[in-house]
Image 1 (cartoon, rainbow, N blue to C red):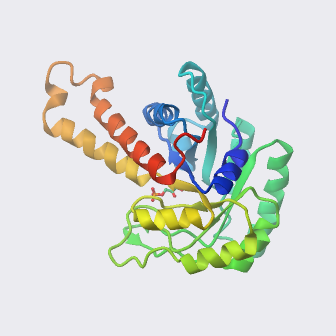
Image 2 (cartoon, rainbow, N blue to C red):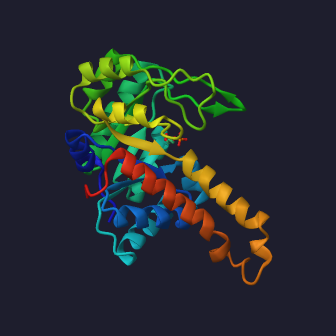
Image 3 (cartoon, rainbow, N blue to C red):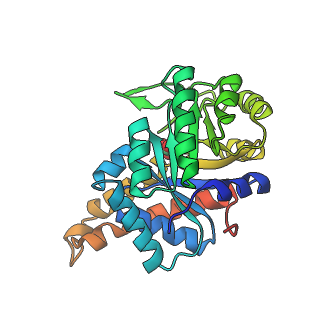
Length: 287
Ligand code: 13P
């Protein structure tokens, strides 16, 4: 069964490694990610965006599918299913559907409203043993073709949100979703250190894990990051492998059009990305 992410992230924070949040879109992605987590004896967080939840027909389907896969694949490593960038309404939908971990992203609200909504959701989640992540300082990304630079969170606002009893904190430190622009200035370790000084030992979350140089990832982990989110890199790897298969004409050879064969190169490409990330984040053998 999917579990809360609280304990696995506290252990990661104390052990100076990070647990990966790998976002899922369908059965194939989930299977690929779970296979590697088990193979490398690593804890794993499966991220579900609102869009991905809708695509998979709804959160109940996602919970039922994941729990059944954990059982039928014989997965013994700890696995959390986590709503990614949830709105207030969708946090409630996921809580009702059986998620044991959610992210409430109130970063676009004025801080007082972010605090009020986060406070309420912390109470509801903790009464049910559900872990909750909150965000301060919005994490940029591409919108309508324009790539916004990531904001840096205000350390005092981070403390206000952390004091509500959240389980892990996503603080913007110049990180963005999707590909980083050529003129990206890198992560702000100054902000990360200032946030850490205010919030103490709570596990910190680094969004936008695709395309951050390895040395920056390692430094972020040494400064308290215990969860790193990756989505775009799996999407790019899947698309490239599928394109190669089709461009080689393999979909037209023999039974190459069989969806299980057609999707196989993309699935293998995702597995390679996941293996590389778990090694880099240091969670191999930590289940
Ligand atoms: P990337 O798009 O950089 O992989 O980030 C994913 C993420 O942070 C999901 O919340």
